[in-house]
Structures are given as C-alpha cells and as structure tokens.
Image (cartoon, rainbow, N blue to C red; front, side, top):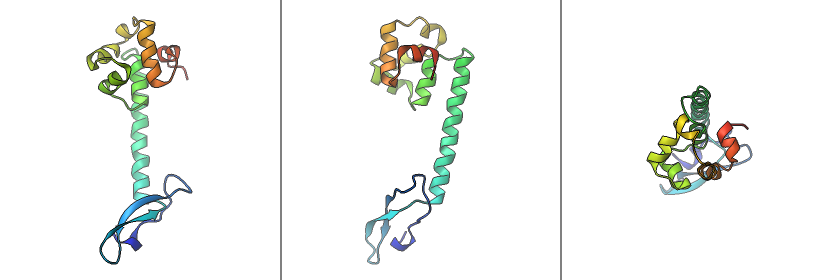
Amino acid sequence: MRKDEVPQDQGILENYKEVVYAVDDQGRYMPVSSKGWSAKTEANELAWVGINLQIEKTRDLVLAGKLSPLAYYMELNHMKPGLLGKYAGFSRWRVKRHLKPAVFSKLRPKVLERYAKVFKITADRLKTMDS
C-alpha cells in the first residue's frame, strides 16, 4: 500500500493512532500513522463476539455441572491447560483433571490458592464464580 493510501477510518480506540508500514514515492517502506481501518475494526469486533460467546458457553457448562469453575476462568483469561499449568506450577495433565467437577470439589485450599493467584482472584471466588 502506498503512503497516501493508508486508511484513516475511525479505529477501535478513539483518539489513538497506530503505526502501519506503507511504501513512499521511492518504493521504500516507512512507518505511517493511521487512525484505523474499518475492515480491521469489523474483524476485531466479530472476533470479540465469538470470544464472548465461547465464554458464556463455558460458563453454562460449569453451571450445569459438566466442567469445574476452573474452565470458566481459563476461558475468561484465554488460557489452555498447558499454559495455566506453567503459571500455576502443575502439569497439563493435572490441570485437565482439575477441570472435572468431582475432582475440583476435592482440591486442597493450597492448590486452589495457586490457581486463584494466577487469575488474580480469591480462592472463594474461584470456587463459586462470584463476580
């Protein structure tokens, strides 16, 4: 894209600009300031709709007793078992096991605290999903 063709549509963040790279008159790439691009804004908005739907779906599964509250907080924080395991100091296998409601309900307070610390919430909130 040429320097003078860089979109200046309203972006997601008002009053902020982003840097994109475009070609100048000599054919060299250079940084150019842009307010945003409507196509990018639409794509981001659609992506967030999908993310929020998945969070709600996971929440419903937790409330139905099919997953532990750990699954909800993982979804809310865009984590997979391997990543959560690394942050909390557990193996991926162990995190997957803790996603089962029967196993989760028997976790020791010390284990719950480690998970809660990763999510920056209390252990009580982790257990009950209270806001």
